[in-house]
Length: 156
Image 1 (tube, rainbow, N blue to C red):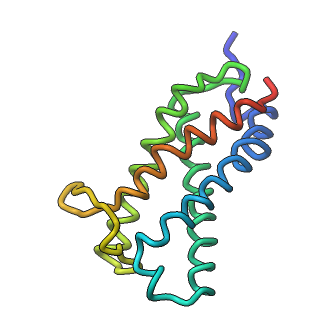
Image 2: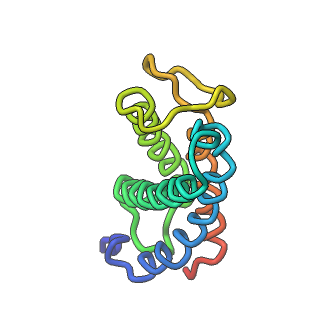
């Protein structure tokens, strides 16, 4: 008999909404605030605009993180939360977030000019584009930490 897929497991949805996202959000908010000096917005924008940008970016991070988790769950064909392979999920969520972030950073810094890096932002060349190291590290580190924190409180 085939196991119930994760998206039909009420406990899985509860864990995502009540454990993962609440663990993920403050970590992303803290990272967004901490990396502000690495962007020109820190010295060029008003406090109100900076606050808006932090809120906007944090909400975007929640959408990206949720989508990355859903994609990882689909790719791994997970069943109910009790049987989730947590390490495998973390190893998929992080690179999915990094991939989207690399694209977004390139699009916004090089194509649209929506924001710019300060000279203090370390960068790495990816496919000919200079991408900030801080946002890449954000997605390598924060999702696995949030998964671990939320898992500790998982009802399985």
